[in-house]
Image (tube, rainbow, N blue to C red):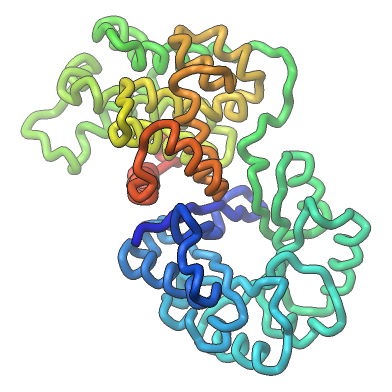
Length: 406
């Protein structure tokens, strides 16, 4: 049985990745109707990790996984590596002696214990003593309630995670309140939305990406654009002269590199380098998310019955966060780029034959499974293939060292 599984980043104060929470669903029709929900959850989780590998899904970072009462009591988390697994105790779980003892035993085995969607009550004190981390929902709770919770928790040895942080302003607010970790899609939002020009150095990078994704791109035009940027030229030549390629002779020119890599590889490799350069002052996860979407959309196009141009879909995914990367309006940015109307319409959420691809990608990464199924149906894509495509996109994106690309 195939399942849906996605990951949502959790950041530290420096906006480096601390962990990923795993969002999952057992299938398109919410299977296991005759089996207890906790048992179904355990089966889905164990199949996922034993078949796919937790490290492949999280890129070696910790995985936060939700567990209900029965899996915790029965020690189901022991099936997973404690060094990579943080156990999220759902807020609906009754904190009785059996549960607290189970959490204590799991903590003794090296697992981190996380209390999810937390609102303080004295009856939770025994469970809080076993916890390492506590999540507080930034959307569900008022600021006064959050501050009161923080005050109540000040006597416990726990760190706080602000979850559902949706804007940069909320991130700054949570940081000031004393939270240590932050979860949500704030990093995908522009910091300042105002009419401002794209800096010249970034404008040249956008020109290179635009030429790369021109269906009939010209090698000479691309060569001239790349040679204008010393940083891009250096990274391209360094990459091709690395031991990974084991070349018999050194590659000394940009044109030689472009010809050697071939059309598809040069498009994708330079796109990754340049997008990293554009977002050099942003969290690495923003670039990584763009790359995941690019590869995900490209591979979705190879799966369904419609079969659009894969390079268009790669470009679509890659540019889907360009407003956050450049802190500008999507409409204004697109006016400066010679992308075709199909891509522009999809990025502006207008009608078009590509819109469902990017909507499917966004819905998937957010765990909006009903919307995923709806988009998959309209694109004639078998839902059973989507999780595999997504995990392949994760692996492809995680193979890039963002710090060296930037």
